[in-house]
Amino acid sequence: MILMASLVGQSHSLFGQDPFAQTRREMVEQYIESAGVKDVRVLQSIRETPRHEFVPRGVRSRAYLDMALPIGEAQTISSPFIVAMMTEALKPKPTDVVLEIGTGSGYQAAVLSPLVAKVYTIEIVSELGQVAADTLTRLNYSNVFPRIGDGFLGWPEAAPFDKIIVTCSPEDVPKPLLDQLREGGQMIIPVGERYQQTMYRMVKQNGKLIRQPLRPTLFVPMTGEAEATREVHPDPQNPKVVNGDFEEGGESSLGKNGLVSGWYYGRQVKRLQASSDTGDAPSGKRFVRFENETPGLDSHLLQGVPIDGQMVSLIRLGTMVRTKGVRRGSSKEELPMLALTLYDKDRKELGTVWLGPYQGTKDWTKATRLVPIPPATREGILRIGLFGATGIADFDEISIKRLD
Image 1 (cartoon, rainbow, N blue to C red):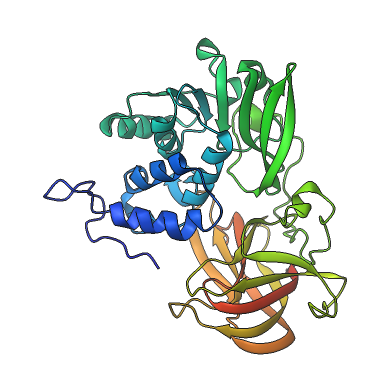
Image 2: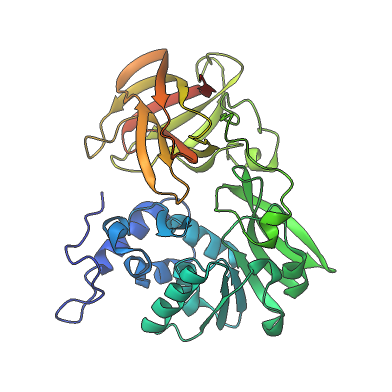
């Protein structure tokens, strides 16, 4: 696991060297290159961009872990892998003029800065936009131009754009962004329901967008006009797991690429069909398998779940799990489990409960747990996998049931 340097919050040591340079190199190797990002320019930019400068001091100890972090105003900074993946998907060129929707902390714009000619970036939350602008100025990102406003409307005075990258999720692509993308230009954008989104690469051809799905994902919603026109809303008083039996999605383009419908950020996971080679499934024909040979290396799946603690006070969390040759990873926490982390309206963590951990070799076993829901809860993140352990762990029948 990555060890944090002791001088958190300082961008230079007494000798003018960056104390986080080695930490970032380890982060790129462990979390980004190992997950499939290959563009050497993108990898170098991630290595050189001081992510700790773009997060609040209270979470800087986790700045170089592969996780989203709260940045205030109910917003988050995306994980380093997602930033790297989206940047690579954008195929940045030194001559590109790029529009970013959702400045957040400014980190994505900073990563893009050395890769393109200009970055125009818009943030709807004025407090965040001002802090990001100040950080980008202080760190001398002179080709990044921030603005506070509704990203749904784009930046018509600076259009057309060669590329557009959207780091928040509307239900569908705002028409002003289509209009401001040049013919032949590309857009990377997560669209869909609040907790069921797909990241797309879209190319403008003959005035229309040709869509290529890249992966399931979860971003904060695009607010402003995009949220006001949203047609499908989550049901936080009836929390449920999507595709908890893993029977859905094998025939979709995402499924054919090895991704699991309804779940996102998968690492070292396969959706398998029960057979004499893979073994049976507790029910149906499908389950997911996590397999890892390197202690400490990620192997997991995630899913966001709306839960309103004002309406829901008790749930039952459940799963079926099977293990083979599972051994602890490089720390005592690294064992297979199902974990549910709860968050409040500002996306501050309220606590985590889990089923497991599991180790050794065991046939399919049912596990359940009653989970009291704090009144401040507004959403949860489910995580299943090996979490750095080695061996094989199979999961099926992931469920959340309201009991009150």
